[in-house]
Length: 258
Length: 258
Image 1 (cartoon, rainbow over the protein chains, first blue to last red):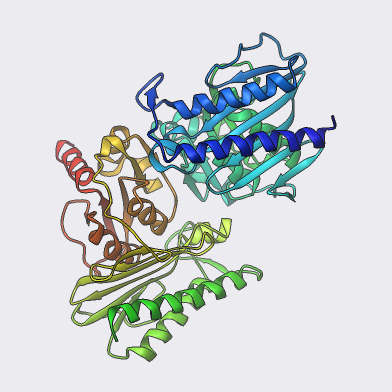
Image 2 (cartoon, one colour; image 1 turned 180 degrees about the horizontal axis):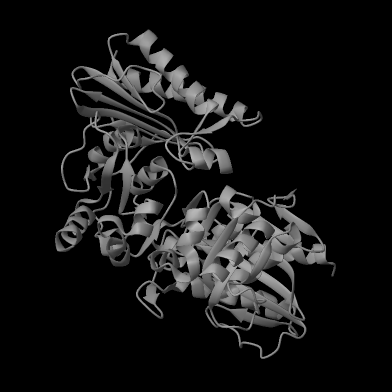
């Protein structure tokens, strides 16, 4: 199977999953909390991950899977092909707004991002592809992102980090033209990839950034942890930044001064 | 002319204005700053206000107009009919994203809101109507907004107020399920009116809230300045809140404790 065929196959799975999610909006959704009262999971998150894990395991039994809801055994190595799944990114928006949430899948080979898929289900905005295939928005190829400085762009931020001024977040926000808080990593990646924000800073787990980095890096964006070190898909949640090359450098400069 | 006919007429003007704005996106936009480097105005803001002011003056020469870009003499009294215009609300988004901005018009009679129009141009999301006609989203009547408590909803906030913790903003954000920063009052009003956020706190001029209050109050939402006093369309910029009845009370309680 070629990479292009794999893209088509995964897109089909994600569209099928999204149809099931949209049907579920007519039913009563079972909401539970995880680590705190704002960390939500629903039966739909779990059913969507289960659906995607089953598709992957059936088609590619040798591959490994890292999923937010733990429907598959977490691998101990990044050797081979690893799928990183966030079945519903932005569960709070899903529960409270029934929109502004994404299905995300990142595919890594030997630790390197190969393909990413971010689907804003209710807006029908699907960004997918990778370094080999190029990156597409609903079928149209996306150009490299313009290398905008922090001072000339909008910065997406995690609400809690911004309120607590974690690691220079507020200084970065002051240098930028403004701050946006969307409550969904997928929407922020979509925004940075389309050039609507020059960067996004948050506290992310691998399923929050795996798809995003596979889509961002081929377009010239820079993805690292906030200390500048490389991300890793088997890590726990860490402070993370995706930004234009210039905005990333501007943020690192703020961190050094702090 | 009936109120329903007036709604149709104003909608037509706003659609015409939005067509001109969309055409302008293919041209070089002339951006200038006003009070500070984040307070932008473009030739398109000015052209749009001029277009709307001319339509109103020709059709209703006795009426008064309050416009953000000052294309009409500000009235000294709220007697009679006053139109309050924000030709492009969210100019920063307009300049940097070419989306996520609104055209807004509020119509007041003897100081009372009669009709409101908020058009998210690029999303083609048009909310319009008032206390007499009911409120519509792209032709469909909108129901009363569910009276959600602050702790059960998302709070829209002004980025600067949230960073500086102005008047309990951060405490309110902590009590809420989360904070969203959209950078456009019109988008926040649309969000609260649709029940996607339980409230929105910002520092607003009359053109930022006039349309919103005319649409919000008929749906059971509460609009006041942050000290609880009534808004007034001839005031200068002031701290403002639109929220469900319960979330408004919750916020007032936070303010009293601070």
